[in-house]
Length: 210
Image (cartoon, rainbow, N blue to C red; front, side, top):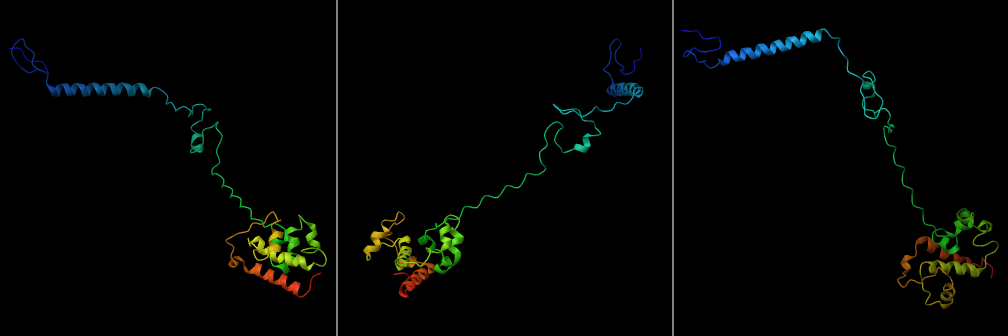
């Protein structure tokens, strides 16, 4: 009786039995080892190759020695952005409202004595140098001018002068005059009250030209 070849099982004469699974695994392992050994022998006879320079598309090549020093920076050839954006400029402050330099407007916010002693020149001298020669006008002020200033304080606040027709007619000729039906005396502030009182006293004491 013929003997079975390695990897075959004994069976009937003339028939080949199924391969032994353990034998096939040994053959595959041996073949893999031979391939790895052959590749290693070939590589040992060749010089080691270094990686080529780092190249960014659209820029000049950058060597590996230089690449670490520019880590985190923009690619070579592109403009660099500042490391930090500048602080935004503060928004301009809105211009303070101006009451104008006519005497009636000035008396709404500033005391009469201060205006006569240089405040008017400080506020309005650049646009009207005559206010620096004397305020509300150079020389002796007529009493009628003081009466007008006292009443124009109220006119600027919207008083309608229903009980003083002479002044109502006069102020209706001023382009800025606009009677306010809702006018209340409580609207007159302390500075305006003081100026009206001072102007009345100047006329009563005859410290003006008749």
